[in-house]
Image (cartoon, rainbow, N blue to C red):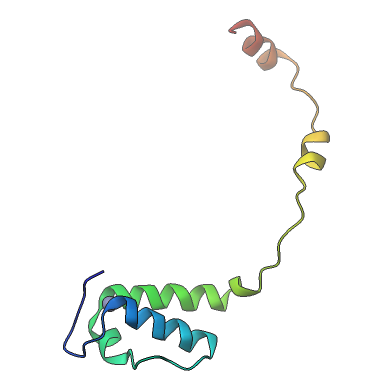
Length: 88
Ligand SMILES: [Zn+2]
């Protein structure tokens, strides 16, 4: 995204620095001047902070329960099932 401002920090550089800040890593540049003037980066940073607040970084992979769920479902019977079969 081309959103240069007078601080010579573009959106990509700003977001890289903000990402480092969020992760507690050294920031490659000072993004605050760009962030103050760029609505797109403000929105991006708000979203990142919201995801971090919800613990999205700590989400563990969940087990695949597809087979267990589908195996527990009875085949559809009755009027609706009958109509569906007739229309095919
Ligand atoms: Zn920006």
